[in-house]
Length: 72
Image 1 (cartoon, rainbow, N blue to C red):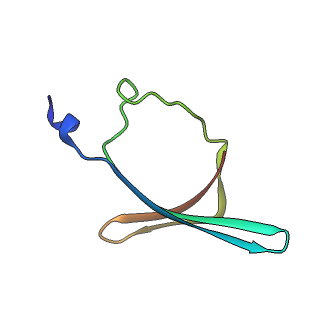
Image 2 (tube, helix red, strand yellow):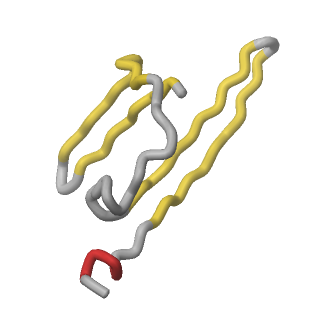
């Protein structure tokens, strides 16, 4: 077993549903941690239609923080 096999992958999330008449919204907050993608080891199983620039936000302090909306 090599060192990359020993890395722990984590995904923590929370979601909230908001309804206002006919308007329904889902807010998902997530933290994803893991290793770099190696397509030989991590085959892609689903495609994302696209990311939208609406409310796109990327910040860098001691670490990167991003808010991204995806169309699937």
